[in-house]
Length: 255
Ligand SMILES: NC(=O)c1ccc[n+]([C@@H]2O[C@H](COP(=O)([O-])OP(=O)(O)OC[C@H]3O[C@@H](n4cnc5c(N)ncnc54)[C@H](O)[C@@H]3O)[C@@H](O)[C@H]2O)c1
Figure (cartoon, rainbow, N blue to C red):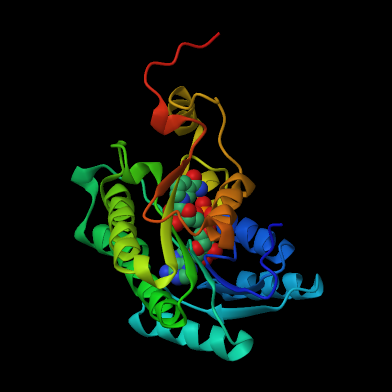
């Protein structure tokens, strides 16, 4: 019943972590997959791996913060596969730094990639999809965009902005067959998190997670794919937590 046969999906950030897990899941459901990432070597490898498994795949080197790259990405996807039904916009960077230590350069870099990048890529995909009268866009927010967390001034602001942007695009395109939703993952074990979370940070996170564990990329990918199904056409403007209960929790008594 659930298939993406014949559809084309772009996955930004598809060379690693949550994007990689999502690209594999989309391929498993029959979609053509375009990997868009600034990591050329890993991106090529992922696209080649998918092709070996029989998936129509393409790698397009993309810096999501570059205004020209988003448009070039849509053109490359269309000329290779002829249509674009799904955008998974997951490319992003992390930073943990107290507000008082955050420089204007730190701020500008995080906002440029996470927030301006989302605007550029979602706008470019939306333009193709609105014209075609069908589309599924899934963007990437974070629990850090919904809750205050220490060290999250620039990152949290960028992800809160992604959720707001997602709601606006969802409303503006609601009559065009295009749904726009965002994911708010909690701590998910990927390369980004393994670099950023030392054992003290891990302990602090686990205290607030009712399931008492980090998520894995496949659990976020499954939520993304669900929102991209043709059958999910009545869900739009939603921020979906994938967080082991973190956003629902208050006092947690263990044992
Ligand atoms: N892992 C978590 O705990 C977690 C939690 C909430 C939200 N997120 C978000 O999920 C997304 C994916 O994170 P991940 O943990 O899989 O990280 P990751 O580092 O494993 O993957 C991110 C990918 O994005 C690519 N990328 C970075 N900057 C880019 C740019 N300017 N242009 C194109 N590609 C770029 C990287 O090369 C990499 O392949 C990010 O937006 C992150 O903020 C992650």
